[in-house]
Amino acid sequence: MDLSLYNENQIALLEDLTKRTAAGTINWEDVSYNPIGVLVDEKDDGTCEYILTHIISCTTDLSGIILDIELSENLDILTGKGDVFVTVTKSGVAGFDEINISLSEDPDYEGKTVEQLYETYKDHPVVLFSNALINRLHNLDKVQDSFDWASYTNQDIPVRIKKISLFKLGMSLFEAKDVLGFHKCVIGPILKSF
Image 1 (cartoon, rainbow, N blue to C red):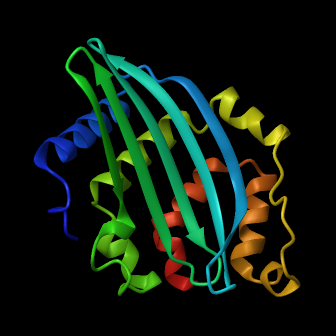
Image 2 (cartoon, rainbow, N blue to C red):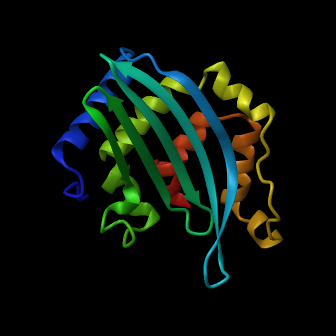
């Protein structure tokens, strides 16, 4: 895993947020959640990618510095490859800064198999942060209640995609409102057998 894409301050901030979140010393506010669902991404060549995704957003105030977080976890239905994206927007008297970190930015990511993802990225700062944040927020009423207005898919999905086991797993997790279960699938060892 190559972290040279990010400066030391960016990694240090994410590591600090991870520790504080896991310890429960950060008060996350304005929590919003877009539940597990299927995203169809049509490419320029007319092909489509089918992605299982969920997004959690929240805010905290650390000594006058406002941090807005957006965490997105994705699973490619066709390949089984997981990815985690986090955007940290920092604003305060010192100005504004935005940090974007994801697994797929690593130059070696594309060459990894599903089986290799867990071992390669289990200690990546974005994975450790997502573990802490999802574990902290997954049972909040605001998160669980969002499933009441959501649908698993609102686009036409070909029958061949609906027959794929990962599509069915996503639907089961959606129906069970299992935020933590989906999170564990994104980069966890469960996908070794996919």
